[in-house]
Every structure is written in C-alpha cells, then in structure tokens.
Length: 256
Image (tube, rainbow, N blue to C red; front, top):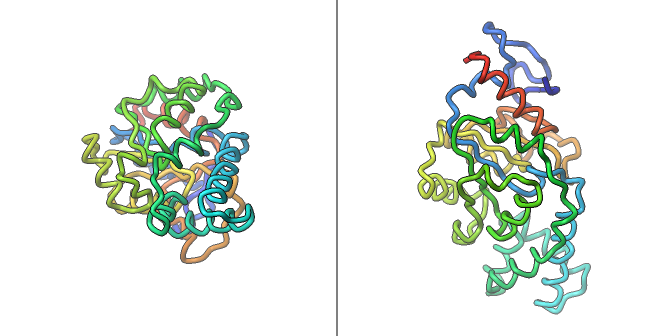
C-alpha cells in the first residue's frame, strides 16, 4: 500500500486511521467510480522528466519573439499569465490577440522521445473498471504524442483538450461542465487525477473524487494559505501507479 495522508484541514489529517470497515480513509469511497479522468503533463509522467521543461523554454522563446521582449521579461510575463489565467496562452489571447494554434504548434514541437514507456502504469490503468478520459489544458496532438510514448493511448476513449474547452483552461468551472457534457460523464461517479490542487477544486465542487498527484516540478511542501488549502483533495499521493494498483486490488477484492 502506498504511503498515504489525509488532506490538510481534515479532522484526522496526518494519520492513517482506518475506517470501521478496515479500509484506508483515502479509499473509503471509490466503489462507485465509473469514470476515471486524468490530467496529462506531470501527472501521467513524472515532473522530473525533461519533457515539460522543453515546453517551458519554447513558451518563453515564443513570447519573446511575438512581443519583442527580452527572455527574462518574456519568462516573467509567461508565469504572470499562467498564475492569473490558468495558462499563459489564455493571457496572450486576452491581452495580445494571439492566434492560439500558432502558439500550441510551436510550444509542443518538442522531443517526446525523452519519455519511456510505462508498462506497469499501463496495466494499472487498464484494470480500472469503467471509462477513462484525458482532461488537459494542452493540445490533443501533444496528448496523443505523450500517450503514445508512454504506451497508454489505447486505454483512453477520448481527450478533452484546450481547443475543446474553447481555450478556457482549468480551473475555470465552465470548462469542467463542458467536459462532462461532451463526454457524458457523471461527476459524482468520477475520479480526477491532477498535479495541480487548484485544478481539483472545481472537480470537488462538482462531486468528483479528487486525487492530487504530487510529482510535478513545483511540488515542494505547500505553505498553508487560502490559496493552498488542500481540504478539497480526497487523496494526496506521490506515486500514481501505487495508488491505482491499491485501488484495483480493493475493487477486485469486493471491499466495497
């Protein structure tokens, strides 16, 4: 069983106290899950890989050339828009009339070959009972390339990307409603895996089971502030495979 801890703000946070049923608290309510939703970058592959840093560099380069900025100023603007709007692209569209396809094509023109196939994760995802979807702020083309390299693409029936969202990124709740409507997802019967705790908040508000996957580059310990409250995260893990493997074991055992 993976190391586990409860969300901050929970009455029993920091303990492994089991329920009266004997199930770990983190797995107490997954028997009803029929829809398994996954973010892509820094969730299905480790944030320590050299993939997302390539995207980061290309974003900075694109912004510098597009707006005639120094690399330093471009990087500052990139991060400002990311934190303000959920993606740098959204800020560029709103403030600089950027045509989004040119940006997406440029920043995702990277070497996906740095990712290695992950057969263990493939088996864990395959064993999940129900439908599986990708829900990403990136492009469908990028998602397909990542999934192909990881050997995971055949498990997912669809990809809801930034274009499907009309370029309104997570965590805007309108995008979550659009995703569940397009793919006939029942939020209350869904689990959503994300490396951003902010992107999990709307999912929790809609009744989804939320799993924070802390394997991204920004996942140092979070200082507790209003913006970093994790009480909406049903589970926090630094090992997606182990979480899924344990969930599959419990589901097969009839524990629910």
